[in-house]
Amino acid sequence: MIGIVFNPVKVERAQLEDALATRTEPVEVRWYETTLEDAGEGVARRALEDGCGVVIAAGGDGTVRDVAAALVGTEVPLGIVPAGTGNLLARNLGIRLGDAAAALARAIDGDDTPLDVGRIELVDRREEFIFLVMVGFGIDAQMLAETDDEAKDKAGWLAYVGALGRAMAATDLVDATVVFDADVPVTEPAHTVLIGNCGMVQGGLRILPDAEPDDGLLDIVLVGGEGPEGLQWLDALKSVVWDNGIRRAVARDDTAVDTATTRHRQATSVRVTLPRAQAFEIDGEEVGETADILATVQPGALRVRR
View 1 (cartoon, rainbow, N blue to C red):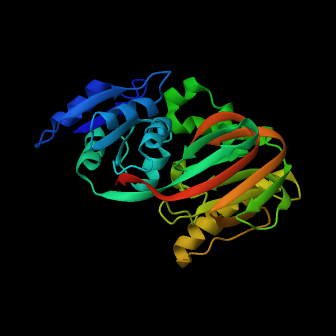
View 2 (view 1 turned 30 degrees about the vertical axis):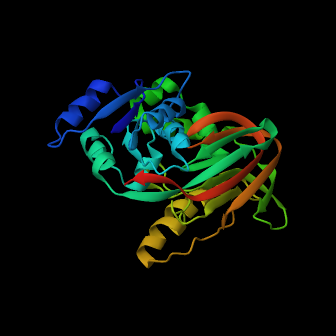
């Protein structure tokens, strides 16, 4: 039996039913609708109690993350029908966007593969979440905060581009104290810190070039350093597009390149402490402000159909 958890704001049940109707082999389906009070985790747990052997999340990255939270540590695989703005996990797993029938077929008939699960503790807020793609503060979180919801509905992920300039202006350079695993704490200026399980964002850019969703490691990039702010952003853009993008592809070089403003690391845990709270995001969703985070990884804790 297949459980489908769908976000009615992002996708209509009728659309999914039409996609299922194209199958030559029908399947038994139970439907679970998310609400403002239950974004997916509660209804996904109900799907498990009902005996569903696969639970499919149909919606954006927030819906996928909430459903995944109920499946972590179980043998029940997660299927994904991407229907959000960013669809970051689907992009990283190679799931076709804009084709509900193909995504459902993969979710129902595909093979299971283990996926690492990140855990993020907002220490100062005493809150804990899972993440599947990436978390962080700085330009990505500010860009989310600056993006209008109506613009997202009309323009999709392109709406984020319009918010980029405002995000750059709102992002502060602060002294971040970082501890990788059991290393000695290091304090250095940074305006952006990203911690990820996957590395690709919209437009095919690999912000974390070495990130693999099943390698048991977190990938971290710190962006900042001394010097004029405009030159910092240019150097960071060069790092993503050229040094760790085109150059690596052409040279077939698997080594991440640090620059004057970007530093890459891999670890199983990382703690970042800031002098003051900053806007923070989890898998492309703004979650308010925090000044103290601890990220860890659970290798292979989730099974995914891909």
